[in-house]
Image (cartoon, rainbow, N blue to C red; front, side, top):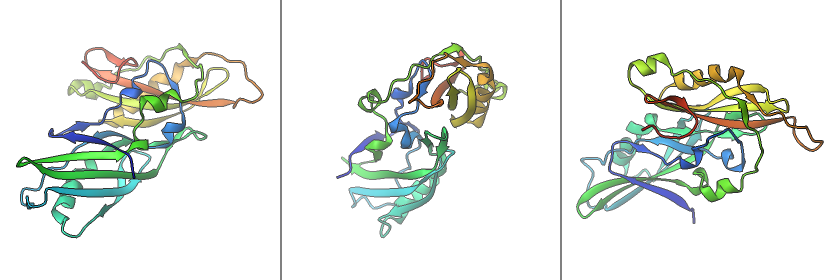
Length: 249
């Protein structure tokens, strides 16, 4: 039986919990990063014309989580008799965003299979909608603790500029970069893993890390020449770009 993380929401906007990504320093890409992770999910509305005789309707959405964090080529099941519920999901599907899976060797986001389950239920006369994900799609503290520990710290921290257009309209956001670092502490490759709600936050991060340096380590015979690191950046109107928290106050 599939183990799931189920998130119930009566709000128009659901932010999937990403507490395990609240990092103060870059972290090495580990086993759990081979899976996609939900970042932003907007629950569908309960169809107004849907019959309340059905107390529970479960729709399985299977597709491909693309390199840019979108769920593409979705397939819905079961279809028969659930057309109104599927249409409700299709309306919000373009708004869903995921942290893509990572190819550790390439240090780059890659497409992967993704499954999302959506429940439409009537409880005590009130319609509710809930969303769930396979458990291995959501990183947990116990999983994170098993990740390999590699001591790579920033000796020259990057100065990230807040995107001007975003600040002008009062928009906050976040991004995570993938950095390939060599033994000399130099960044030899950098990519955006995800950037929400606008790509400008990821672009600003790429510019800012140009002069970042990591600690130098002595190469060992059995260690790779480079290591893939993830660097989360949060853009808050109150204190600019920072690496200390995944939320803005």
